[in-house]
Every structure is written in structure tokens, then in C-alpha cells.
Amino acid sequence: MFRVRRLNWYTKQMPQKLSREDFLKSFKLAPRLAIELLFENQKSELLLLKRDKEPFTGMWHLPGGFLLKDESINDCIIRLAKDELNLVINPKQTKRLGLFETLNGDPRGHILHHPVKVKIPSIVNKDYFRVIPKNTIPYQASFLEKLGYKLEK
Image 1: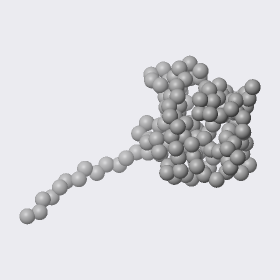
Image 2 (image 1 turned 90 degrees about the horizontal axis):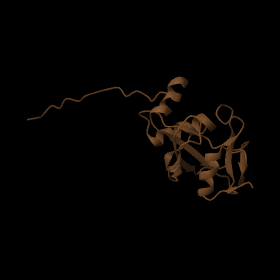
Image 3 (image 1 turned 45 degrees about the vertical axis):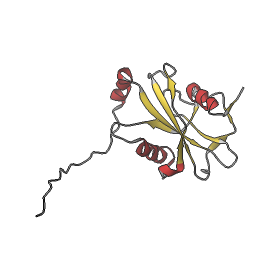
Image 4 (image 1 turned 180 degrees about the horizontal axis):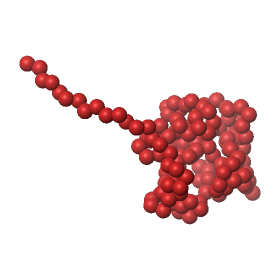
């Protein structure tokens, strides 16, 4: 005799970004997890981007962003590489480098930073640095120094 099992089918929704207003409100409710991507070239120089929106407009920063509700960290890494640099990566090309905290170094609120090194060939036409410039977002410069990168004096 065969047993018939009933399967519960459901449709999983893709994680959605919050509206700007809800995103800013979320910092008042709980810390937010930021994933920062570290790309190095063959000379061990670090890729940095120039920030084009508030806060920290005009400063150097790591490519990255915030984990969305119902999004795995691996899916977030893949999404951010695509959104920030138009790259398709595999999580097997990554190495997680720990967790760092900014209690009040960002005007939005409390952030937990999870830097992730991505092992791929160099990306052309991007800015790489052997020494982290002074005008890098301060909390990123701080954890980059703890990870062994040299800061401009």
C-alpha cells in the first residue's frame, strides 16, 4: 500500500527594498546589517568607489549595501556585486572577514558591518588603492585598518 503525502506549495517572494522613508525608520528599531565587498587587484590594492548619495557624498567607500528581509547573506552578496559593479559572482569566490560595529558613526544609526573578500580577477576602469585615502567613510577606514590595510596619514 502506498501512502499519499500532501505537499504544501507556496510561492516565495523575492526580497524587496524598503522605501527610503521606511529604510531610515528601520534604524530607529534595530541595528542594520551591512555587507561590504572587498575586491583586490593583483597588486593587493583595494577597490573603492566614490559615494554619490547621502550620507557621506563624495567620500570613498567599499561597494556594498544592506541585507534585505528574507534575503540570505549569500544572496545579498550576489545582489550587491551585480547592483554595485554589474558583476556576476559565486559565493564560493568569497571569504567572510568578521563582524564590526558602528554605534553612532553613521547619521542613520547603529550598523553591523560584515566585510566579505571577493576573489575574482581585477575589474578594469575602477579605482584601486594601496593605502586607504583620508576621505574614506570613517567607520570603513577603521575596520579596514583592523583587517590590515594601511591608512593615509
